Length: 138
Image (cartoon, rainbow, N blue to C red; front, side, top):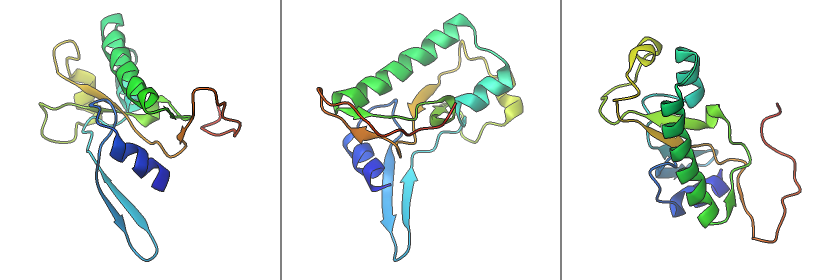
């Protein structure tokens, strides 16, 4: 978790989740992160069944921007999956229900895709190759 905090504190990208506060107690660490009211990209996909090509393109462009921000500081995520990509709808004030996710017009509604869960991430130099197996098994 400390590694994740250090990485998230150095990043300033709209497509990578932000850390607002880090709290250390005697027995625990707590990380207060930006809230993504749409939940995970997996949840959005599950609620809709599929994305159109236009929506897929919008999503992928934002994922690439987030990954570029990580690449620029030489960080490998190592567990990128739909569950670790969050969706925020800035024009919606509250948590969006599954039913609302089905009906929301993704073509016209503003949304921001944010890479999250950098718990397995690590800094990697240009000529270095990570050797530790990690991430979520397929």
